[in-house]
Length: 222
Image 1: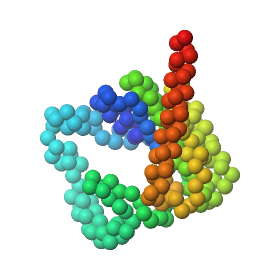
Image 2: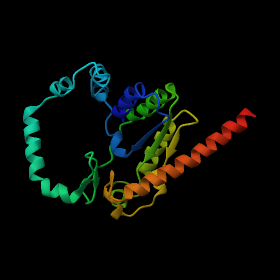
Image 3: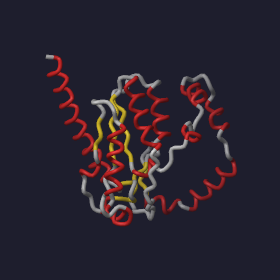
């Protein structure tokens, strides 16, 4: 979560046309927020690269790890048949999941991550950008193993809500979608094509909230 806030603050300073910052979260995003890992890239170097002041090879050379690259290339080659079944990729390399995974992370929530929500909201407000936080629906099988009474997700959602300080900020609770296990690849990813329905759910909630916000602003100006 702290790395997400760091990246958002960096991009907002360079994307003046943005009006809404939307972030989709799962409990996994709150596992660890250590100060030493927050700045996961050098903003000066990346800023120079995005501004065209630094050559593209410099960024790649700085993070070049030949042994890791070789191992990863071999691993991806061996998995090519599996990837063709599990993933559907478009011309931009974007992939959607088509098969379930065995990944079932136990919830470990670091309270230091809460402050990152507030920092991200403040960074958005500094650029006249509205922050929208969306939580993923809860996978029933994951809940049965780690949160049978719903307390973990309830407390986590309450903490997110408490970290939002501005009236125009919006929290869209994914628990509004009571989905079955067959819509999830794992607790933090949706299967194709249910990402479309999730996007529609977000859009509907965002539209309704925007209408209410505009109505409140209109009444307040009278």
